[in-house]
Length: 399
Image (cartoon, rainbow, N blue to C red):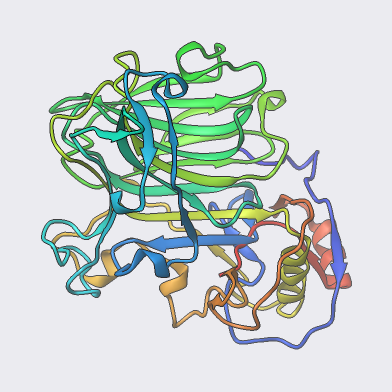
């Protein structure tokens, strides 16, 4: 993974605190790779949603379902686009230990539907779809991952992306018309002020990758990592593509968006689908830096309290291969720090209002984000940090 080099440290802030230790893990962050590696990136914040467990989607404060509509002209298709709450349907697992079969049958998870039949709104034809936006909009640098299975019906678009505005967006899009029995095409896009649209993107900001599987036949993971030096996309833990032209990178914080939609445009989504098309989500995991100054201060307090302790930076599991659900035991299911009660691995992480995973609830305010890369070949820096008991502002989440 690309990160800051020894010659150019990305260390932007230190804060000195003296706080008594607490019994927990990961208080200094979550690392993309092993802390025993020569270089590793550490994020201070996390957002983890295990959609196989959600019974009532309105109870999940990490996400805001979107309700909006665009007429056919604005939607750039023969149909308008509209998102509705009824297109978001939870199917929680019958057995929350095993997490495979849902209460309505099939694989447990959250379904985002695009119905086959159009809906009349103000006398015009619209295709319904679904959109989820993360409540957190303070994400700046991070690793973002989604467990998914696409619909078998051609005619929809599935999008998973980090978004600030149309000129600052890191995007993954799958078109169900680009899936066959053995292959799936995935569209990777970095939207920039000079990057253009998906259909007319600047060279170097748009790549189509052939994935060697049918994305409607099983659960897989898509992921992208964003650091100061690279944006890299992955599928099932295997690297797909990297952009290192940092002049194209976003400069402001943003949020995560998940969409499933159609407008009938034959140049992109096509459709409408031949049946009621369901995109299945099993999880979203995001480990990132916060641009929120209160969350940065809280990270400083937590990390300073455990200087010198073991397990203060926790490695994010990044298995190679698709997530496994059917026929596995609990230890083989996708890992979540927020489900690991033995480690207390999300101490004082707050995501939204009255939902918390330990410690006092923190109230947000507005600031800027920081990125930290720790290098084991920097003994002088290490001595200084230990001597001054600093708190490095890097990557972690408030849950």
